[in-house]
Image 1: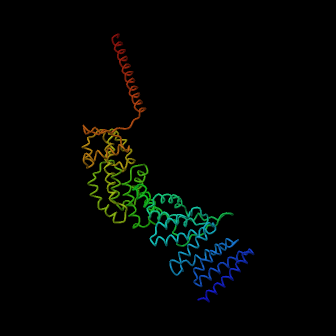
Image 2: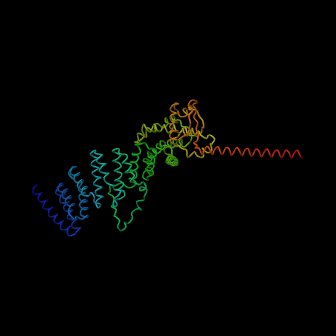
Image 3: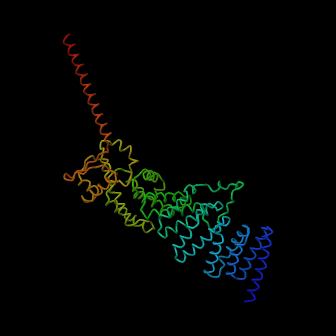
Length: 469
């Protein structure tokens, strides 16, 4: 063994002298070859510690050319999977990442090394260390890295942050990816680089396609939005996945996703985006494949009272099946679903005389977070609290609580006369509105007085003319 070690040292010393001569002579190709020969010699001899030492030594030599360091790092990276044990592998990765740190010409290689080291740490159960390692690298600034590889790297950063429950940092990292990039046509993006531009490297074979990355991105965003129950954003994420061609072509894939879109549309608070998504989903022909969900959405766009008990009895099995299929529906969503249906009854009772306007606006006053309560407020200007409780299938205290919550959130304008047990719905008016209404009423009154005077004068003239005749 001593002889083998001395022979290796002698061979390395000889190659180092050759490397020095080539480097000082400015021979880039010769320096590059000498460096690669040293790396190969250490690998073939199985001298992993010597390999690490030589990599550090060669990188620190005075006037070392960039091409030689790049070739050395790339060659050594080929041997990572061939290391005899995990400790040797980690040591080699750390050596290569330290050598490539701060060098723009090997920034892509360093990013790939950090990613491999983070994967090892994750397999060892050290999620925090893996996440911290990945966050050291800002791949969005790498001009020569392929777009798909950049996206895949950032998605890995986001995933590790979600795994460690660091939702704030996960959101910050996710914003580094523009969703418009997923809609780009890859076939039209390959342009010849202009003079002075960095050449973009091809992504490794294991990097997923752009559409696959789109699916992964939205699945991670669903995980992020699920922690604070942002139902509308979850629905939009599922809608984006649903629109992927590979998903739409396979009913086994799009049916579960369309079911989730329907559930989260029902759970989402009412706003213009929710209304638009609800109507767009109802127009989807694929919804006919799941008629129960089509019926559910139809009930929500129809301004009619929904009985919570009957609805829950009908859809309870669907809800339980959704949980078994791996959906994010749980106890909290059950409470929110009941709240949405309860709120549906109370907003339809204000303006009973505006039935025509109601039908004209029917498609825009859909499901919402205001469901049953909104319906009630559209059809009544005054109603007893007991009647509201009956419509909502709640006790008087629960009905009053939900009504008060909606008034506090400014979703509804109402006053409760508790001694009389009467609720009055009205529209909001500021001081200018009140004054304008008064002025309008006075103007109408004066017009009526003027017309009355004119009619009296006319009748008087006609009567006088008859008497003279």
